[in-house]
Each structure stands twice: as structure tokens, then as C-alpha cells.
Length: 302
Image 1: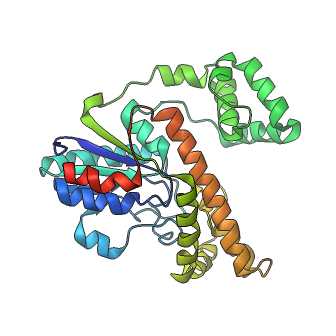
Image 2 (image 1 turned 90 degrees about the horizontal axis):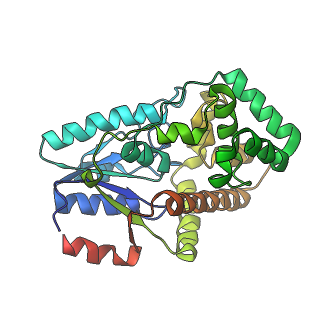
């Protein structure tokens, strides 16, 4: 199996061992690792984002990790511009780019192209969110389907985030989000990529998540959040969504115990892993699924 001519993509739920596998694969194919995780771009969130360790950087060259300030906006479009440059540079040096992460939207933008939806003013978006809060998810979904009938085939009534996004796009641009998607063209040919999805059994993954949560706290996650709080990052910035910040903030305010922190972070991380797996089922049907127990066999075949 010759993967050296490809750009290798590795996706999987959080705590599935993607980063470790990417390093082992890089050793086999003369590769370099490129980050495809929206939280691992932030410099100040090393522990909570489960960024690779310094020893990993020494083994294999890593790119786009911890380079962005939590105070700055960083979008999928920003990542795509940078990753296109990195792919070109790594290829030029006769190395194999290995993109690894759990942000499905990054991979979709790379393989399918980035949808050029016009920027929607913050005040406009806030009005849509206020409407959702006022009338509730069920009634909001009914209004969405009436406004944009195409969404009925793609958006689940319980998917609040996508429902709000679809509503604001249709209302502002007069064009369905899915019409925008249809008009999007990919930059690369399909055979340019080799796509791997680490399909981790749920019970085993839950155990790994619980263990990693404890390890994060042992490695200094509380101190990391203390420093984050001092930065006074605006609420609108994406870094605030990092799992663990609010939970540890509550602990620092003496509202909950450290045992509660572990439980809350573990639960929220499991919920996130479930959303990542749902994304994969809906958007990555053509990716090669590998059970983590078969990763060694896969590496031996290369």
C-alpha cells in the first residue's frame, strides 16, 4: 500500500488516539503531521485541547498547533488557507502530509470546498438566536421548514445549532444553505486524499475519556484555566467553548468540588464524542473505517 503520494486524513472522536496513530503512520510514510482540530490551534489551551506533547514534536514535525491567540477570531476559512499552504510546502519537500483532528467541518471544507456564504452581521444573528430562545426549538424548527423547505431533508429538529444557522442564512441571503453548498466546488481531486476514520467502540472510548479527564487535571488544567480567565477573552470568541473552562471556573468559584469537575468534563466530552461520531456517519460514509484494535495490522501493510 503506497500512501506517500497521497494527503492522508485521519478523523475520529476525541480521545480515540488519533495523534499517536498519526505519528506512527508518519514514521512509516516519511510524513509530517498537520492539525485539523479547531481547539488545538490555540496557544493558551495546551492541556484542555489535548495537544500533542513536546516529545511528539521532536519525533515528527508538526504544523498548525498552538500558534493562535485565544483572543483572536479563527475560522474554518482561516484554517483552510493555512492548510493549503502547508500541504503544498510538505509535498514540495517530498514528505507526506498527514492531517489529523476531530473537527469535521475542517475536513469537509478541505475535501468539498469552502462554501462562500456572505458574512452575516452579528446583530442580525443575535436576533435569530433571540427568536429561537423566545419560541423554543420545536416552533423554531417549524418556522425554519416553512422558510426553507430544503432543510427538512437535512436538519434534525433537535439540531439547534444547524437550525439557527440555516435560518439566518436563508433570511439574510434569500438562498438556502443547501443551495450554497451545491454551488461549492472542491480545490482537489477526490483521489488526492486517503481518508481514515478511527471507529472507536463506545464503551471503550468512554473509559478513555474518563481517564484522560483525570490526567488533564493532574497535568495542570486548573492552572491553565486560571491563566485563561485572567486574559478576559470576549464571550464571542470560540476558545470559550473549550470543554473544561466553565467546569473548572465553577470549581475556582467554589461552586462545585473537584470530583464534580471530573464528572462534568467527562460527560460533556462524551457528548462531544457522540456528535463527532454522528458527523462521521452523515458526512464520511466513503472514509475507510478502522477499528483501533486493527491499527497495528494497517501499519504493517504499508
